[in-house]
Image 1 (cartoon, rainbow, N blue to C red):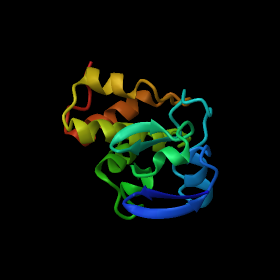
Image 2 (cartoon, rainbow, N blue to C red; image 1 turned 90 degrees about the vertical axis):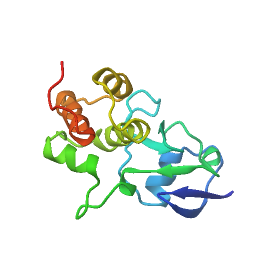
Image 3 (cartoon, one colour; image 1 turned 60 degrees about the vertical axis):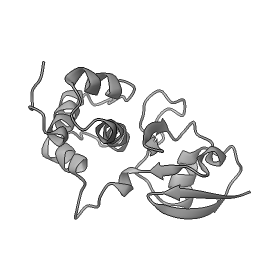
Image 4 (tube, helix red, strand yellow; image 1 turned 120 degrees about the vertical axis):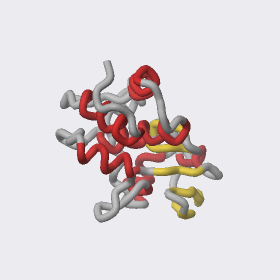
Length: 156
């Protein structure tokens, strides 16, 4: 089936079965490899993207359900030469260990900061709770989000 999806502000026409996970289309058809396959069950967040400004698991979202919606991936936030504010904060705070979860973490955090540029510590922690980092860099990830929001580095 021919499906048109808008990813990072650009329309893309793809041939895919309607039930194909958006993640597979992003990685396989569009070669946007930031979102990763983690669990395939929406339990880890490695595949997180934004759908109409909200964090969503691309491993669970059928590509047909993405039609007519705005999809944003980590590639849509900045480039290596010109990273976005949140990407730069993750780099500065050395929030990536292996890097596998980072795109999903950034996309979930970006959704929060887009909706609430100055979240409280509780709001940050609650919003980020669904995403897992197997390397244990959660504290650096939280510092990066605080940095991007212009909040104090350490809040307890």
